[in-house]
Image (cartoon, rainbow, N blue to C red):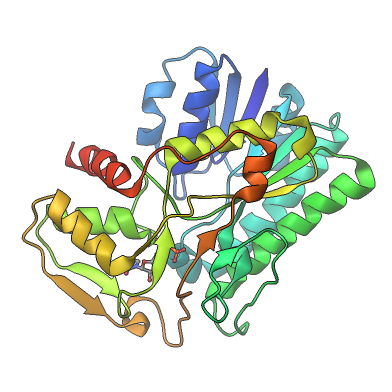
Length: 322
Ligand code: UDP
């Protein structure tokens, strides 16, 4: 089998490429290195089955050449990370909307190649009345368009609609995975992600920056589990045309997370509370709780998260500590 992984030098993308190579796939990847790095894929470049193109998914010519070669496209290239979206508003919208349009158009025209679309739990927006367990058919609750965070949710929702439209009207085989917070080695804190940020701060004995009151909760899925889920639903025939939450339903408060990381790194860091408007921008809206309902995923593939938060943190700390 031959696969194209867009965004293959990113955190999830590089782990996916690695896994596909282990499964004897021939892997093509395109990445403009806006948030991904060569470091993430350096070890893969030794393989004869791995082909890296440093280019943009908006380059239709190169995308045509690549999609022509493969059986399946894992479309992971996107502007991600709350901070990155706030700092790069226009580029984020273009990459997320036009980029996906190009992937779908070409996958359809070049022989109806299967597409796995990476979507996000940002789709759901804010949690309502403390009911934090999100399932695929739930309503979305977004803030005003003056609050820039929600642009990301909108671009990915449009990606989901586009993919489903190609499936419904053109019979293009698409599968959509909505990632909840995913973490592990190679994730960078540069674009806001909490675990790599806390680990770096703790390893340097610098203050651990907890935004808001720290009582907000998140659920973290280990990258290895995420990869198992992606490849299994991409291979599952019955999953075509469907949307799946991909996450770990075990939640933790951000304060508890900070304390755990401080303990596991034997750090002398203090915990510092930072107001949201200082951390992001005025009027920033965070969601209090976010937890995936993964019963649909479990009903289509054999899946349950195998790595808990403690082990996830240990492995990620080991990566950062070198
Ligand atoms: N967060 C924090 N300190 C940081 C970075 C993030 O307290 O240095 C919080 C953030 O406000 C959110 C949670 O950690 O409540 C998860 O943030 P992240 O950006 O990793 O993912 P999100 O779930 O917001 O997409």
